[in-house]
Amino acid sequence: MRLKACLEISLALVFLSAASSTHAQAVPAATRTEPPLAIGAGFSGYNPDWGHGHLLGGTLWIDYIPSRVPSFLQGIGVEMAARDLNYGRSSSQPGLREDVVEGGVIYSWRRYRNFRPYGKFLAGYGNRDAEGRNGFRYSDSRTITAPGGGVEFRVARCVWVRADYEYQFWPDMIFNNKGKPVAEIHPQGVTAGVLYHFNRPHFR
Image: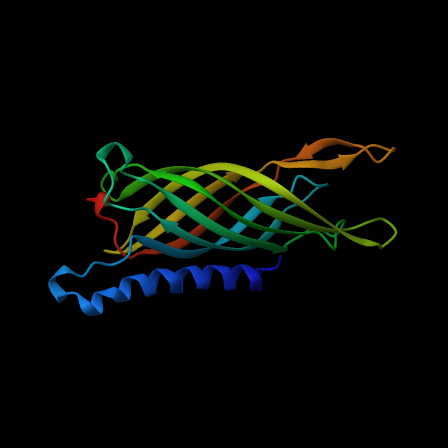
């Protein structure tokens, strides 16, 4: 699944959320609220755990963290992410590429001054393209899991800069000479980006 499809899915979610908030047209202006969404993008650098070198690319995020929940659930939400790593590969692996679409739980702690840490656990779909020694190109797809976390820094009222880390589990990616899967790979990396938070009252 390529970044174009990821963008289409992400935009569809944004439009659905926006549509739900347009109910405000039938509500007095004083009671209107913005959706508890954050939408952002970043630049990623990853170790693909396949040969040597690294991969670079872009990441999209959509976070939904509701505010009207019991106090012990404050900060718990849902994150969806899409990543396309298709640049900066080493010359020894000219065809290497990794794409990921994932979603899961994110927990945001209350901010300390302008800083706010978070942790997350995501699961989703990963696709890796590679090129063999004979020049033959092949593709592998897996269901993956990815714990991670990071920190955000507020630079304006609704704009936050994010530094994000993920450690991914791709099962059954390495095979023995009999064609039997014997090991998994663990791509990991960091993403630096910017998010726009529409309404996050628990930041106060």
